[in-house]
Amino acid sequence: MSLGATRLDILLLVVRQGMWLSLGGFRGRCFRRPAALALMANLLYGAKPPDPATFVAVAAGLGFVAILACYIPA
Image (cartoon, rainbow, N blue to C red; front, side, top):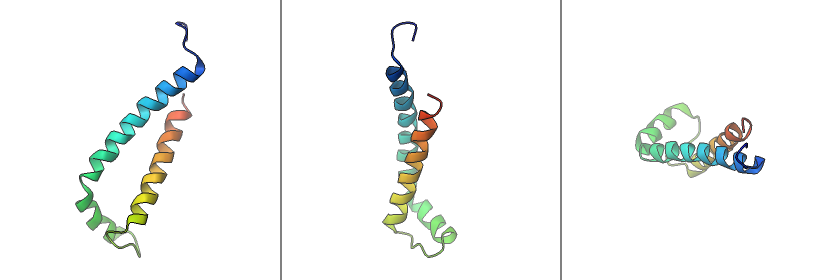
């Protein structure tokens, strides 16, 4: 901020960097999806392995938590 950055610039910088890390982790997990399907079938009651609604809900929830985890410290 001493070099002329505004609060919004700092906020966007921190959130953008944190979300890039979260996106990288998400992409890495997408490649391991077949193993996750078998694990999910054993752990979640009533969810079939190829249940897209469960995957979308979990991804949206984790995305929201990642945004909060980046925004609050910024």
